[in-house]
Image 1: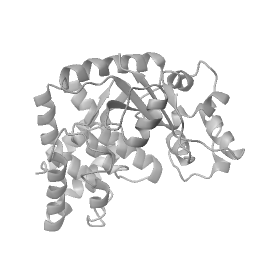
Image 2 (image 1 turned 90 degrees about the vertical axis):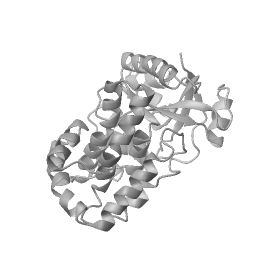
Image 3 (image 1 turned 30 degrees about the vertical axis):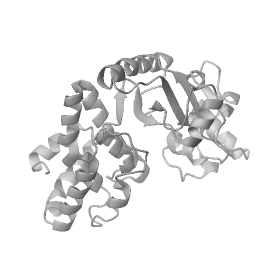
Image 4 (image 1 turned 180 degrees about the vertical axis):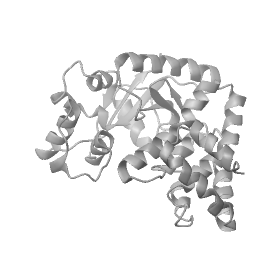
Length: 304
């Protein structure tokens, strides 16, 4: 179920796992394989991932990889999801091949394991997987990296459907859409990069999921909080990204840790000490220091 020691290191390298994390994952493989209970847990997690492979599920439904990780031995817990990811990899790659997904799209999508581990190391200074549940989407064929962006095969939940319908989207609960996500560590969010990614998405899903008619791209992010326009120039990448969307009403509850997490790398950083090196850092920090709050915004645009 797991590659041997030498092959495991190569697989991790192909998944963009940070170099400084590879040795620990390889070394602790022996601890994992010697523990029958831990190996059984890996098998159960893989089985849950590959069950109904390719079906669209609500985020958080089905496989509870984050919760199951808590059952792993303490010595393995931080990196346990990486073993599950590697063990499930042959099933995911077989699914990609069956769908005709190009090898480069498959490879770049699956390197999100390494990105996720890089986020964990930036935040905690150790090897670990930051968001195990998020990675289940990649393993199940629900999300793909196309150029600068991630696109997730999704169905609108009731609250989003109401809000987006109010913003002009022909939407009801369960409407198919492509949820757009912005991966970290991938350069600036330029208009040209976004144009290319959206064009790639239109071509990709029409070809590889022809039975699913995607007519709209949706996004649910603090980047769609209209307050950003008070702080950033009109030609900034974030403002131009925001202007792609027809905006629905933002969430009523504040989400101040969202921009702190994504801009500064750690949602728990004290607001008073947030750096002011860039226009985005100044916008996020100054707004919070003045007593303001940030909110998750929602928007959509037609898929070309």
